[in-house]
Amino acid sequence: MGFKMGIVGLPNVGKSTLFNALTKTAAAQAANFPFCTIEPNVGEVAVPDARLDKLAAIAGSKQIIPTRMTFVDIAGLVKGASKGEGLGNQFLANIRETDAIAHVLRCFEDGDVTHVEGRVDPVADAETIDTELMLADLESIEKRRAGLVRKIKGNDKDAAQQDRLLAAAQEAIENGNPARTVDVDADDAKAWRMLQLLTSKPVLYVCNVGESEAAEGTALSAKVGEMAAAQGNSHVVISAQIEEEISQLEPEEASMFLEEMGLEEAGLDRLIRAGYDLLHLETYFTVGPKEARAWTIKAGTSAPKAAGVIHGDFEKGFIRAETIAYDDFVGLGGEGPAKEAGKMRAEGKSYTVKDGDVLHFLFNT
Ligand SMILES: Nc1ncnc2c1ncn2[C@@H]1O[C@H](COP(=O)(O)OP(=O)(O)OP(=O)(O)O)[C@@H](O)[C@H]1O
Ligand SMILES: [Mg+2]
Image 1 (cartoon, rainbow, N blue to C red):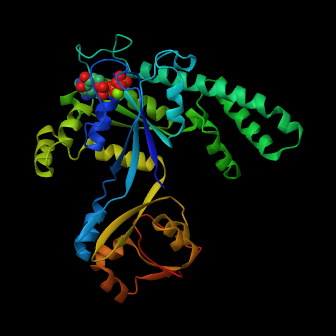
Image 2 (tube, protein in one colour):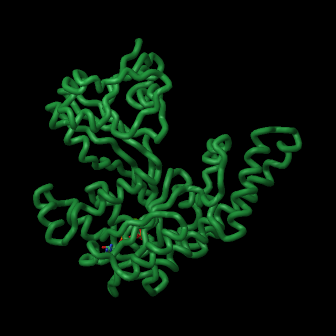
Image 3 (cartoon, protein in one colour):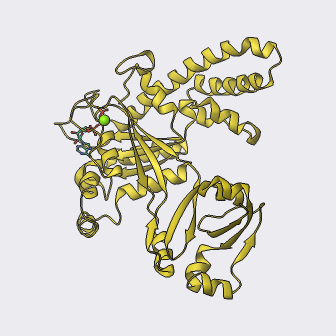
């Protein structure tokens, strides 16, 4: 399925540093000059989930395979980007293709690192980027609505639906609000997503703080927190620089280092999970002696559709899903004891998979 988060922000705020930390590579060039990144960097990241390790330990699974999510490191945007300033609007297309946005805000003070506006003010930076994205949406909305006029006259229902949704987005943006503030009916949800408006994508603010500030946060990151809360968005506090250093360490060294820094877990794990929540994603597991594996689904997915994530044939020939809730599997000590205790359920086509379910699919070939 592949869910994609775009890393967005002003130039030189630490986007590529964060990307490298997430992907545990040095794939993206990160350096102290604006517009360092031009072509987007794409990388897959394992979603950390302590439940998977527990399940594997109980079942004695030889291999542990986490589920994955894609991050895209995108070129920096500046004021006027929607009108072609900086690297211009070709990069807006990179954002269009993502499912959600991780908006990196510079909260670290470091005189040696250039800020394109010459001052450190993450709330103002967030507004700059939001404004550019709204202007870009507005321009594309106007173009698209003009292109729909003839079709609407010809009674094209899809065109009329698109135009109605575009009009709602336009109204919100003209009032200074991103398209994500529009209430969309379930019937319109698919058409709305297809519009791919930049400001309709869910946002997670990432406060990139200084090396020693990751545990407590700063006055600046607290301000971002207030802004995010007022908008109904979430935020995480992270030091991209520290995370990059941690990502290069062996697991044992890494946990010692985290402890020294006063951190309970790597900020990246929090960030990845926040992204997962933002996209309303859930996990189910398949567990056996060979492997324990996590799979990603959208919340509310039916059992056959969930089976389809593994293989299309599983969905087509779906018969039933033998299901054990995570708590039962762990609490009772595995598949055998759970079955004996009557906690293995046979679920049919109409079953909605729950986060943490341990599933075994039966299907016709
Ligand atoms: N938390 C931090 N504290 C101090 N310096 C940092 C921090 N995070 C990143 N930097 C530094 O900021 C500079 C810019 O980082 P990076 O190249 O990752 O930015 P970017 O947002 O990808 O920029 P661009 O848009 O130009 O591609 C680098 O020198 C990096 O080491
Ligand atoms: Mg970069």
